Length: 115
View 1 (spheres, rainbow, N blue to C red):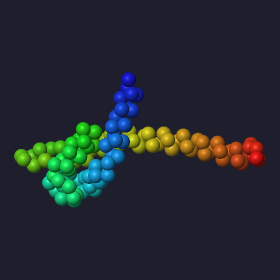
View 2 (cartoon, rainbow, N blue to C red; view 1 turned 180 degrees about the vertical axis):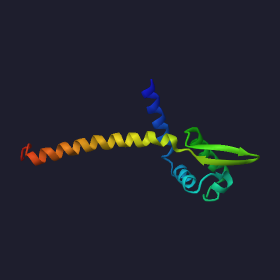
View 3 (cartoon, helix red, strand yellow; view 1 turned 60 degrees about the horizontal axis):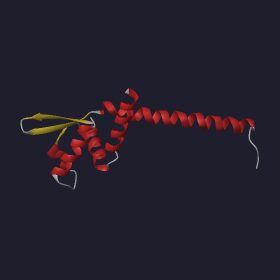
View 4 (cartoon, rainbow, N blue to C red; view 1 turned 30 degrees about the vertical axis):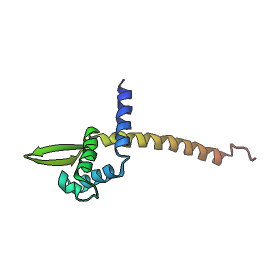
């Protein structure tokens, strides 16, 4: 059950960051720190409502948090879940490293047939 939940979370994160606008919003928040929704929206050629929808998707995935101070909504990056993507990519890298090392050994030892 725990493994399934982890895979489900990884899928949700990958779907969330598959959108260019959401990736650039997340990058912007990482580079510049927390920002107001209205300030974040100024960098895009889309409505405030559209940006708010992207932010809500990032929030649902746990990649950003929202703090309300009065009527102002401050959005901040929360990258704690990004390690799930990083771990998955590292697993893929290690699989390919093993395969390439094995291929290298085969080529070095001449354990292949010339066709």
